[in-house]
Amino acid sequence: MNDSSLRLPAPAKLNLMLRIVGRRPDGYHLLQTVFQFIDLCDWITLTPRQDGVIRRVNPLPGVPEDSDLAVRAARALRDACGNPLLGVDIDLEKNLPMGGGVGGGSSDAATVLLGLNQLWRLHFGLDEIAALGLNLGADVPVFVRGFSAWGEGVGEHLTALPDLPEPWYVVLAPHCQVATGAIFGAPGLTRDNKPITMVEFLRGNEENHCLPVVTERYPLVKEALFNLELVCGGSRLTGTGACVFAVLEYEHDARHAAEQLAAGEWQVFVAKGSNISPLHNRLGIEPG
Image 1: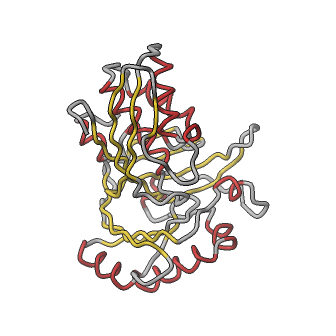
Image 2: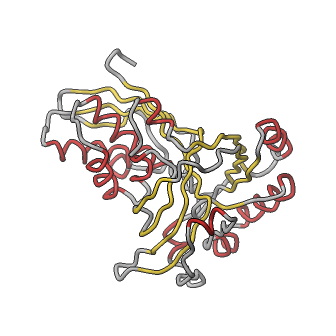
Image 3: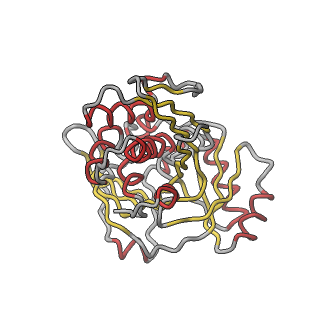
């Protein structure tokens, strides 16, 4: 890493609930969800170039460079500013499980957008960057905004939830990747559930409407949920999975539970919830 490089976190998120309340004419589902960040992160090093080349310096298995959201984010930002000479080397340290429902690719894209906005000295505001991010994926805006949020629409209409508890989480990542498109396209998915209010969520309505379809199709997810319930007294699915999580108040309880779960068909992570993104803390910018 040279003196002009920037090394930044791309944090994971958990969906603390996920409701499917309708479907748009274009096929996208209307959702209600709650996002919270955790301190489990990918790490991205951005090294600026002046020759217009945007490239990934290390391979990401199964993801061609032209499909990589981090690369696409850099190209979108350069196109938006209109300077074809801006370039960057993107070095990704991949820690977040792919196909896990923790927002890895979307978070990587947001980190590249916000990091390059500083490195390239573009001075775009968060509204402009979030709009660019939405073209890359529905989850990108929450990572750009940087606050825990109630999400509606396809997940892009965000209302800050600054006072959520920030507990410890035990997260299991089963050794499988869930195909989100297949889950949302499943005939058995209920798409006309009743919307709820934020107050109802805060009182304990934490359903995930994708859960029945995911557990039917992915036995490893079902097994992870069962074992997490057994050890922690509760278990939930984030997004469409494959990751599942349990909420614990104290770090020592979370680490003890993780030890008990270490021998299963999954990776085990212990993470702290946060209502402000670690990325925004690192960059010294206010969520908004």
